[in-house]
Every structure is written in C-alpha cells, then in structure tokens.
Length: 209
Ligand code: UDP
Image 1: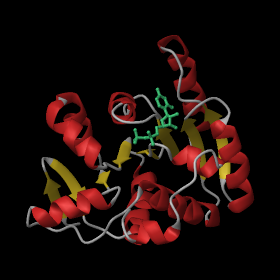
Image 2: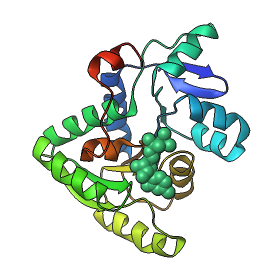
Image 3: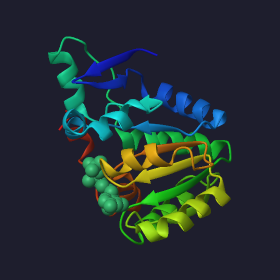
Image 4: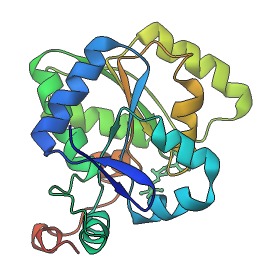
C-alpha cells in the first residue's frame, strides 16, 4: 500500500473499495487495529499535539478525509490520488459487512443519535448485526462498564465517533483492552447516518466544497 506523508501525517493512498478490503482484512486479524480519517484540521493539530501525532501514527489505516488533504499533498509535490471521506468509507464498509452478516457497535455522538442511526442502518443494511450503541459523552466513571459492554458484544467493528482528538486518543489508549475486530474514528458520521446533520449536495461534494 502506497503511503504519503502530508505535513507529518501519514496517509494510505488507496481507493474506497481497497480501503474496505483492507478494513475487512484487519477485522479478521483482530489485533486491536484502528482506522483514522484525518482532515486538514486534524493534520495541523497533529503538528502541535504529540499525543495526537502518536495516535495517528499508531493507526493501521489512515484515510484522507476531504479535498483539503489531497490539495495539500499536490502542493507539496507528493500527490494523493484518492480522497476517501470517512462517511463514504464507513457506509461502503457496512454494506459489505451486511452481505456477510457481520456485526457493529455504534459509539459516539449526543444521546439518542446512535440509536436513531442504528434504526436507520438496520433498514438500509438488513444483514448487519448491530450489537449495541452508546453516546459519546460518557464520564470516566462510566467508561469501565462501557468497555465491558463492548467486550461482551465482541463486534467486528466499533465506530468511535467522539470528534478529534478525543476519538484518536481513545482508540490508542483502549486498543489493548477491547475485544473488537477493528475500530474506526469517524467524527460526525453517526449524525449523518441518523439524519441529524445533512451532507452537502452531491454536486458541491464532487467539486470538493
Ligand atoms: N462528540 C462526542 N463526544 C465528545 C465530543 C464530540 O460524542 O466528547 C461527537 C459529537 O456529538 C459529534 C462528533 O463527535 O457527533 C464530532 O463530529 P465532528 O464532525 O465535529 O467531528 P470532527 O470534525 O471533530 O472529527
């Protein structure tokens, strides 16, 4: 897999279908791997925050979320071919997982959002087994029981939608304590799946806006 560094953050230069295949492979290996989807803000934050930089480096898969990273890579003379928005990657992944009857635990966002996302996703992907949900505003006190719930469920995929840098740091810290196939840090993806926030119109997205 070709890797390209943009201002210190490493990216895998792969298409969405290739990223999905790589993610399925990582799930099968069950090694506590995680996926990050840095946008330009996260890349810049990684230059100032050493812990975040370490968490980004520890990812098994790093996908360029948005046109800003791709533009920066072109300006720096090491162009990334593919833009891989986290939401598109994650939706394509769930579709494949549904075909195979695989399982997911939805973690993140405001109270109620993960449940709504679960309802909508079960309609869209009937083969997908959604083993649990939890909002992303748990206290330190609640974290132990949450980890236990996730471990009892043993999902193939854990979505970690806590915003950046919280989600990257959380995945890095908990990778050794969790029995999951793969974790993916996906920002506001649960809000979009739940219909709480809308994506920009398709035309705008194609133009990279
Ligand atoms: N969020 C969360 N816990 C927190 C802070 C944020 O679950 O402590 C959620 C928030 O509700 C939203 C997502 O994380 O659903 C952040 O989305 P955003 O698109 O802002 O992601 P970013 O651009 O920060 O990756």
